[in-house]
Length: 236
Image 1 (cartoon, rainbow, N blue to C red):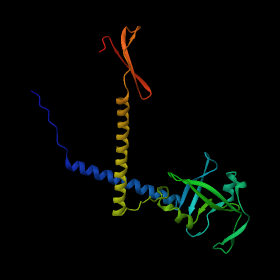
Image 2 (cartoon, one colour):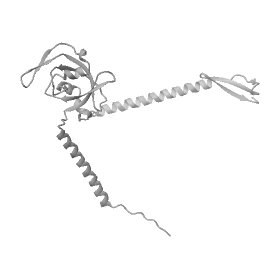
Image 3 (spheres, rainbow, N blue to C red):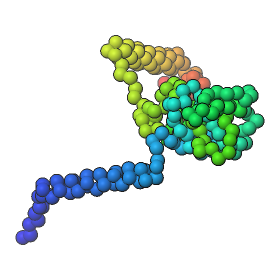
């Protein structure tokens, strides 16, 4: 007689394997952070997509810069590469003084649609176009737009969209609206069922007639937009 037994799992082995997996995950996380530091990646520089048309986009580097309070900036070269120079509005005007004392002159403004990586929302923003050769940046998003659009809450920029908690009264009102909606749906369903029943009950059968092809009697009644038939060899 053969007897099969099942060994019990070793608790200590399971715990050590779990600790090993955590250590490996931690090492991978440290490597990712180190690679970012070595590459000089800043959390305030992100790749975004600017729409050239409804279906075509251009990838550019956007700097989130709260030091630029009132303006959003885009390099002329980026606008030229997207072939949207003719969409620049206005004329040249000084907009601010740089840290080196030079005046930053805008060539005009342009309205552009853009989105971040993994974003569902598409933003529409006005940018001042800045000319110059060998610009060290492509797009700068200023403090006013960052705050207004809550940019830093989006996961694509390292944040997460936090929904405000509802108060007790707001939750009660939402529950009440849900109950009223469910009751209205139930009433509508009951009315529809009652109307269908009334139609069926109000439809009367025609007199029995002889069908030569089937060699039987038949009668009919109209239910809604369709005819219903009954056949019998010996109607009563």
